[in-house]
Image 1 (cartoon, one colour):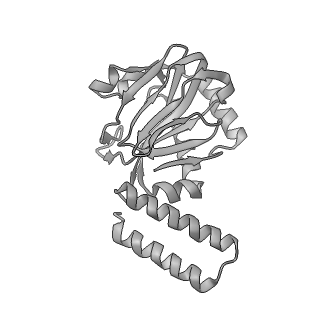
Image 2: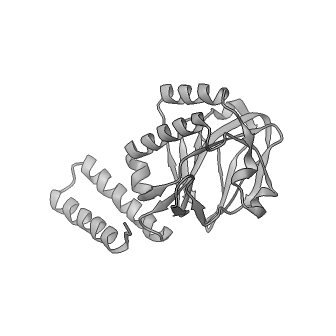
Image 3: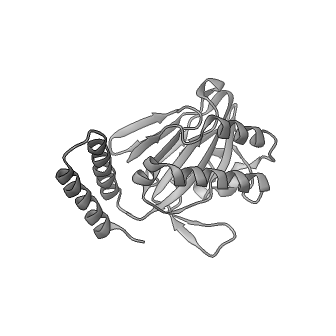
Length: 226
């Protein structure tokens, strides 16, 4: 499943986040990569323990909690605190797959990475290259969205960030453990939820809506792990 979530951040939020990142302390990006990924990763990150990173991470988490499309698509059980990276001219992240398990910083808790997410923080006209390329069973998908947009995709997919050839690409990234582990089941629930929402907006028959809503919740009850 690959889901585009437009305008997760309002323009004023986006401007504030970018201003704070511009004066943040940027370090080596390989610190969050596994042994294999580190060999193909070249970027910069704000250290997780940095006060600016912590404050911005909380702000992104609050935006996720308010976004109905994200909740419907991810059915999140746990969200890894968002990190912030920057790809400057010549930097890239070669083809890799994300680690299946992540330790949540400063806690004894671990998270299973069912989904990966990238939140674009600057507009695509500010840089050339830097596309996120995701490989799945339906082929190769090239993603380069507007500032404030989020893309959510299977963490089990091979993906990469192509070299930046002009400017710099700034983004937040994180992982989600879903209440529904199986990607196909989660996709089915997302499509069903979208259908219920669309029929509600179209003032569909209440009895049909009730049956569809019952199907959704009974499937979630069958597959969900809370």
